[in-house]
Image 1: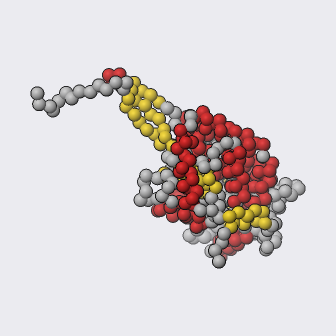
Image 2: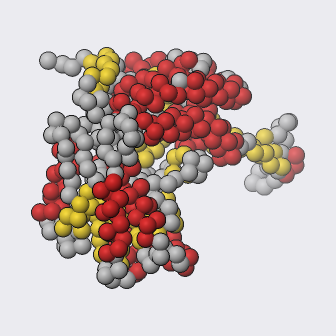
Image 3: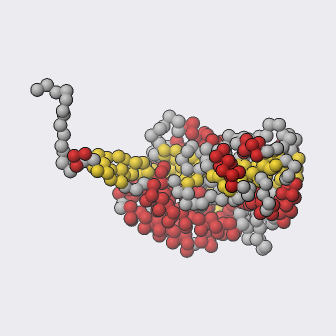
Length: 470
C-alpha cells in the first residue's frame, strides 16, 4: 500500500505532532517556474522589504515557532529559541551580504566605452533541508535565494515537516507570493524527484556526506545547474598545554554534546597529549555526570534532549559498541534510560589503540579520545580524515595556533572556542567530504546569483584597422 502522508512525532514522547499529504515535486516546480520571473522583475528594494516583513512575522511568532521546533526535534526549548532568533537575524545579514558579494560595479573603458558587472538569479532553486536545524539551515539558503530573485521549492526533512511548513507559512504571511516559495512534503523519493526535475536551475543541500556524494554524481553531467553542498564532519578538537583545564573541559562538552551531538560542526575527536591528559579527562567526566538529559520543556532546563528518533538512537549505540569491539576503552558509557524513546547519555571513549579508526560522522553524543605524543602528531591526527568542516585548538600559545591554522584543512578553524562556534556574518562551509567549495552563510549570495559582465557604449562606434583590402 502506497504511503500518502507524512506523520511527525515528538522524539521525547512518541506522541503524534503533525501530519500532511505527500506532495508532487513536478507540480511544485512547475508552479515555481511560472512565478519566478515576476518575482525577479521586482526591484531589489521590494524584495528586500518583503524579507524584512518576513523577519517581523517570525519575530511575532517566536514562541510558537520555538515550541514547535523543540517538540519536533527534541532539542531544549532554550536552544529552539536561539534557532528562531537566527532565522530572524539571517535577513539583515543576507541583505548586507548580497550588497557586498554581488554589488553592481561599473568601470570606464577606452573611447568612452564602459564595463559593468551585475548579477542575475538562476531561476528556480530546490532546497533540501535537514532535521537538526529545521528552520535555521534551510532558511540560510531560502532568504539569500529570494533576495537574489529566485523562486524556491523547499522540501524539509521527512523527520521535521511541521517546522518546514511553519517556516513557509511565515514567508507567505509576509507577502512572498505563494508561487515563489513552494513547500514539498515527502520522504527520500520526493527528494530524489525534486533533485532530478528538469525544471530546477540548481539545488541547495544540507545533510549527510553520503547523500551529498550521490547528488554530486547526479549533477556531474549538468554543469548548467548550480549545486551547493553543506555536509558533515569528523571534526577534531585539540587541547594542548592549556593552564585552564576547567574551561577546556567546558569547551569540549559544548563542542561534543550540544544538540545531543547532532550538529555537523560537533567535535567527534578529542586529541590530547599522552600522559598530560588525565586532569582534562577527569574534568570532562565530572561535567558529563552533571549534564541534564530530558524533554525539551523540562525544569531545570536540560543541556541535551533526545536524538531525532529511535532508529538514530539504535544506530548511534551500534557505532559506540563497534568502537568498543574494535578496542576502544569506554571512559563514560553510553546509556539509554528508556528503550522506547531515543534519549542517549553522553559517551566518551578512548580510541587511541584502535589501529584503523573509522573515519565517519557519528551523529550523536559520542566523543572519541585520541592520545598522541607531540604537537606534530596532533596536527597529523587532526587531518586524519576525509572531512574538513570544523576544527578547534584549545591552547595558550599563539604560535601553536598559527601552526594549527596553517596546517589543518577545514573551513571553520577556531582558537580557544568550541568547534561549533561559527558566526552567521562569515562564510560557512568545508573541504573534503564536507562540501563542494560553495560555502553558505554570508557567502550564500555567491551561489544564489551569477555575475554578468557587460561592455557598453551609448552609441555604436567600430572600425577594422587591419586585414581588409582597400
